[in-house]
Image 1: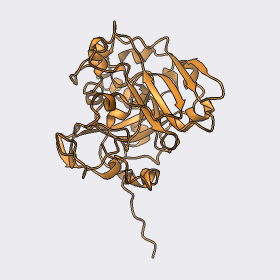
Image 2 (image 1 turned 180 degrees about the vertical axis):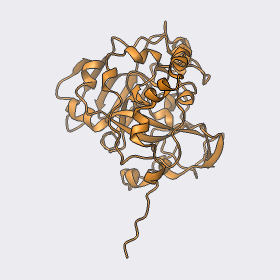
Image 3 (image 1 turned 45 degrees about the vertical axis):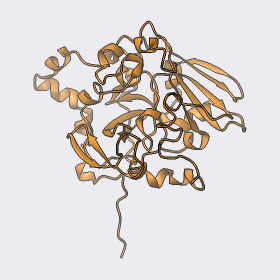
Image 4 (image 1 turned 30 degrees about the horizontal axis):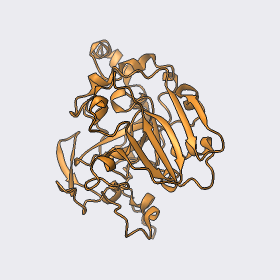
Length: 318
């Protein structure tokens, strides 16, 4: 007898929001008389209504990538963020609205066949956009679930055409201290830098994010382009990227440079490896405010565990 076993990331189809309901939520609000009231409220990402790439959303949802709990409300995801460029508190969304995201140039350099500088609007229209439901696990032991829109990092790698000796992808965010006043704090190693291996970049889970909740991604969440690595702690998912560098030297990331005893290069989620100052065994789900067990690789073991075979001597989990 064939017995189908659900994998950690799967959700029964009967629990998923019907596509017709998801894509028609604005029409439903308008018909009920709530649309105008909702539009009048100040909110993060409102500028997305006039974004020159708004016609690309909502993108088709890839049903392979699902989650086992409800999507965190947009009102929470857009207003509870770490974005140290704009401050050390979670309510940075109003400050982040000052970030100018047009024009936005993206540079691709290093060990590539030819260096590229392109504007974001041109880059995004070259890529195959889709929506994926992913978990997001912060190193601070809280978590969200997000309907991200974007494209696989592997598509960016193909576009960049790196040379064979490239081993890492280094990513760098903007530097605008007059706008992002947190960058005036000289004890931080600005600009924010992160890095992953080429194997991680080409893993199918690695995702370049350009949107969320069926529209261009809010500034507080890392507009206009960020990365999401769902099996790693959230600080690895760098926001508002302006530069991708292919290199044969392992990058030293922002938090690794700032606190090497607490934050390492790999930062894979593991409930059994505590942060030096708190446990990672559980996490607070922001949608329900309940504490739930944390899972190895944030529940994505079957996708990524083979990336780290034979690396037991590495500090993989913090």
